[in-house]
Length: 388
Image 1 (cartoon, rainbow, N blue to C red):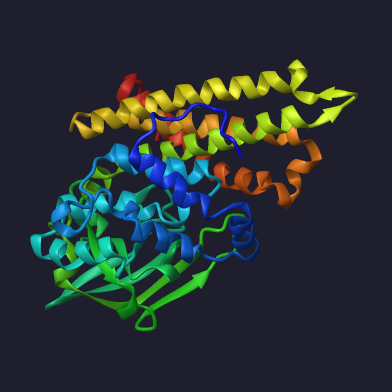
Image 2 (image 1 turned 90 degrees about the vertical axis):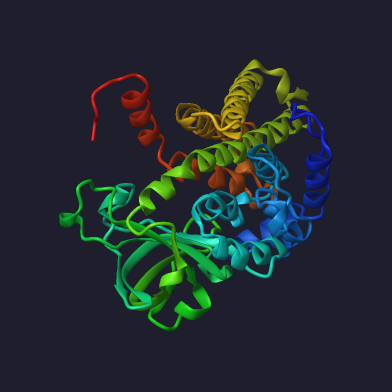
């Protein structure tokens, strides 16, 4: 399908991603969605082409590019009709290992991640009782000589069945014994092959999205002490350190989704005729598409601003959160405009609109709720009293 909405200036990187994604058409993603199957071939192709290792330094086998390159990858995957959620975790978890991992950990893992020998696609943070209140998590990791013993439960953890490694956040100091609630949390690299069946139980959760979502139960799982990232008890700070990148990358995915919906809506409005003329001639059809277009493009500009600040090493918390908020809202608005343009056909799986509609709805909730972003902006940018 011809793309009729603007995109970033053409570059070899974007052109290469577009060419690769063209080999995985709507029928490919539709079939996977129907079976709730993982896009193994697509992820392997991205890995072989080096697109999942763009943020890994060249000395470890990656491209050593900036976050703007990572955003290009994620945007184009979603713009093509695919789903970046199958592999985006490797992008946003990479910063924890890159910035806070030891030299030995980087040498041990990064080259093998870059080559595709190892997959780092799982991120073990969320718990049923804690939700987005991460400091209340109850999974514990207790030091025993040369290893830690992990006990607890995690939920909404995606891609465990398709990963070799997982980043795990657990409490190493009991909550009553810390000065601040964010203290006493630590990050570990968990070898899933050594954990699953040896105390770690994985239970699939059927959801409206094809994200290979699971619940995890840890029962005396041993994790080598050398797999601790950084300093014990400082893990919450390490996780926060990567959240600006996470929000910017997700904003890029939303922009990709939004442009996909607008492309499809425009094509449908041009070709579908009712009462002897294209439905796109009616302002009731064209105005929602035009408004969605304007909002996607505005969100893209904020995403670009946040990316520029991040890549220059400047503070960008407000911009990253705003970009994610605006892009999530814009992609959802574009999704609704597209469904309305297709009418009843928008609910038929053969047109792929309903699949992408479900996928882009997630971004109102994850990887951070839009309400939490509003709370952040109210308190930290506008100076209003804390609301929670």
